[in-house]
Length: 474
Ligand code: ARG
Image 1: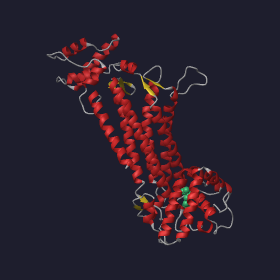
Image 2: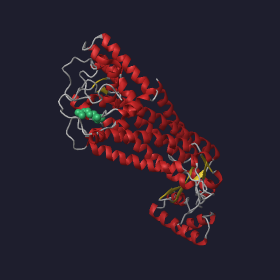
Image 3: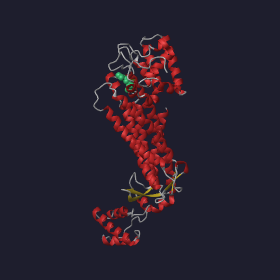
Image 4: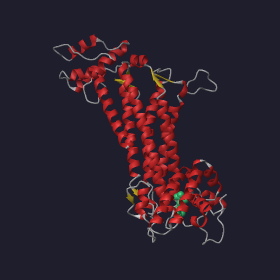
């Protein structure tokens, strides 16, 4: 238990707070991940106080010493135990009390000119910056993994029946599917990078409770110390907004949304009915009752985490809606919801990336089924269109052809093309893809599933990812 009072007010109150309500008002549990960022923020505040000659160099040194001691208590885990035992409302109060434990009289000077309002906003910005950078790296790594798998699948020439509505649609390369996954993760990385950059823009520190301070705080130096470009322009706005945290929760919900969609497909591919893929033992789980089971749990959990992230986003947005400008206690709940969503979301993002590495794609089964369900029908219709037949007529003719073949229980074959040529009154024989490989090789547009187009798309995206890596490691 702290010797210094962990309540940061008292003079005005005649009686102690109701214990249950005090506990209700605490965000310590969620706040614990903020601890190292509050210490950095507090160190910068010492700079601002010293720069404004509000404290002496000697007091500043004592405060820095105490804050470094708190930092090591955070690193060795003892601070969490301590913080939970105090009655502090939040991590900021707990750290402030601990500094007073360590620094006595000097410690009581730390809170000059600052409010938890600017402290929460600044600490949260530092936390969001850190987690957004991590999420960006994870998303980029997952994109690179999907691209590496795509390169292997491209070399193997693995085919896949793309579906719409889960019905066979058109043949594609497995490499094309994997490159599509990579595209969405690359965009996710960009989104996370943007949030991380936004979290470097302006420092709320020195905004005080809501209107700035009469003390000459050196906000510029403090902002630079924390890696921000400048101090914020408007104290009222700076302490009242939670946009950075909301943006990160949003970006996570979006990235997990992409992961959930790929997961859905992989889950189905891993069923014996499909047999398109097999998940390594390392990523599968068994059943406590059914000895034969191999379940692709990580992908199912990722789906659920995506749904939970959507819920958290809605909840966090809800807590910021309709409250007046400035700080209102609702914002403590915004922070708690966002932190939970961010920590859990990051875990799910990591898990998706590692589970994807354990998927073994079954070349033979996928390739063998790529033409099932008349997936070449569109290409045959296209070949009629290329010969001057209208799109509507071509669709009709091929539709009839498919029905006839389906009734006979067979695939489309060369004689069907001859019949089509007759029906359409063509002078020369009709040439069109009749199997899945011919179909992908007949594709001609940029961004198509033609092997050359896929190879080009993979190279381009690799270049994008390499450029991102260079920019973020400078
Ligand atoms: N515990 C609050 C939070 O974490 C900070 C409260 C600060 N301000 C106030 N006026 N009560 O959001």
